[in-house]
Image 1 (cartoon, rainbow, N blue to C red):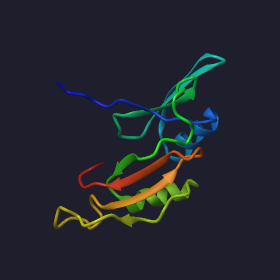
Image 2: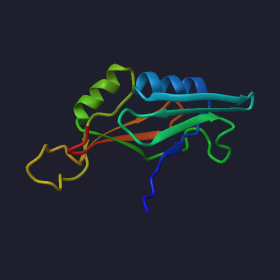
Image 3: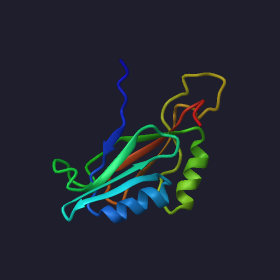
Length: 135
């Protein structure tokens, strides 16, 4: 039996601001923006190439404070290019950091161990990792 992770709910304080950040600055695809009522709105966004989406909204998350989610991780084939793209789009992103030694000899020295970090406008924390063979 396969168990797939399809959606992660990200708590935000301003849905429009978060939608703009994730779609315009990070390049996530807006799958849908559904207004159920004045108290309920669901926006689903998916990173390019990902099978897992995030959901932001109003009336979606009552148990987490905006900005309280930490440790979300994206994976890219080229961390330097990803960092440059984020910075170019106005995201405050860390320098590339090396976290340990690459466990797979012979490849790019940043494979598996190269990371950058950023926060969304509410302070939800993200990391981006370089992984060999990802496109």
